[in-house]
Length: 320
Image 1 (cartoon, rainbow, N blue to C red):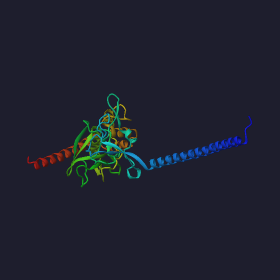
Image 2: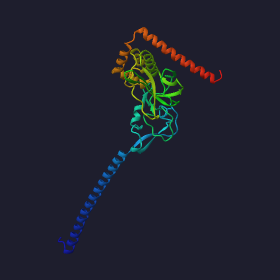
Image 3: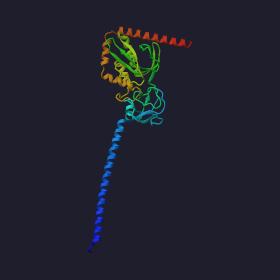
Image 4: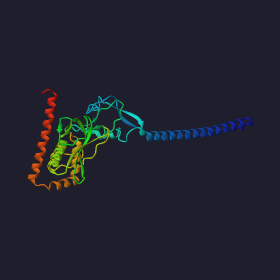
């Protein structure tokens, strides 16, 4: 049936309107798509800017003492650490983060992994924890408190200070025996320190050799603040002591999980590059066995007398 002019006009108007609506809808959708894309790009840029400026670090929830477990039990219950987002420019580079926290994973006897983060020093709530402030291993039965009188001490040394124990030779060679050791108590010519078995063996080896080698000087240097990092150990004990320490470190010295981890791992590394040991052996070779024994005996007697004198003075102060 033929369409009258009015109907044709209405149909054409409808089709034109529908086409215009489609075009407008497409334009609106396109604009919305571009707007959403722009917003997503802005969001990604903001996230990248935020991530470049801020980071998540581990912070103490409460005050802690020295040698306190910070991460709670093996399941994380009772943790003293919480995660906070802070400005990267406001924290030390070695701050403990979720990523570096993985360095403190250890295994129990069954092979189950858990975190062992233990404070080296007392710290206040809100402190951003750094790797210099904590250790992986604790002071469980492997550590002993030892007294020494053969180490030359700084005149201003006090209890709770941190020291490096070093040995210096007549030709200027200066080696680190034990680094960042806390002073439990310091007297005029003696000090008390808490050492692992490996540290004790190494230091005793160095003391004997200091008696034998003329011009050897055993001394302590004081840290200016407790947050300073420890130095690498550069003194290597003799092979017998190394074998003893390697036995303590366990079957996997590359990843020690026992209580001897830090210094023993350093000694095993030093054994691979034993320049310091070769140097010390060349000095010891200048003295015959009898002469070495006499010097060691004299050194022991002097140390024994100094300790006896300090003990008598202490007992006298106590009224005995």
